[in-house]
Image (cartoon, rainbow, N blue to C red; front, side, top):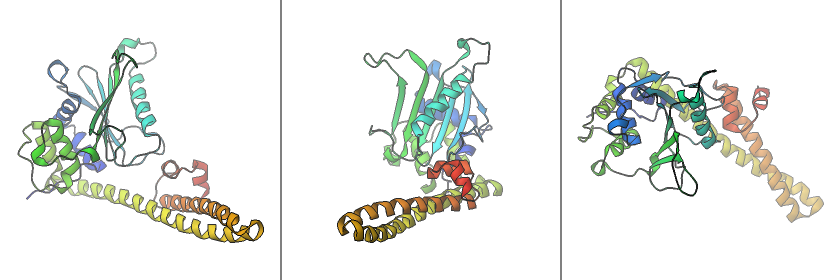
Length: 311
């Protein structure tokens, strides 16, 4: 019986898809997701800093990227995101726009710019479409003409993928099944005939991991669970505190303005104050765990200065 790591873990994702010694894994995956065949097919890739792509301040550590360029100059950003973040759509467009524009140095012409393609693997549902795979292009609003071809966005929404092992119809099905279910599998499917997918399963086998790799993987999983636990507890306490403060303020205002009106207004203000206190408590706890001011600000909605003052 085999055991596999959770591919959605950021350490596992980097090891499997950002492995310079196994580039065929990423090549096969990209060709399957993007439907590249014949002359469009990716044959080789150069990984660009696969272990830590430059970030915007405040992003969750569970968002990780692999940046690659093929021999035609096309650039690929591959991201695994386990939680929806504020401004997700804007950040994705910023990533692609930044990577596209950074190809051109001062004095060079626009002809040096090559297509930039974003592939996002999401552990949450985001788009209205029922399909798990969606492609987003720049099209004419009326005619749907596709002339602006240099930017493309492709998303895989894991919650929408419902197929079982015996229902996998094509290569992209097999890849998504692997990413979504790896942790619960105890056998490698017989249908993994492509070399890239077979290599991905091999990289995900636990017994192949070193002690240091396993420790880093475990630390990443614990960190994410800690963040979720702190957020959940803090929100629960904020609600309880808000209700209690709301009741108290409602009683006081009721004496002056009338019992019914005061209860409603006091409860509303109390809830607001309670939530604010709870959010600040979350921020204190996250800072105590060593999470940066920028990350805490993004996660709680507080300003960076407010987070710093809590210390």
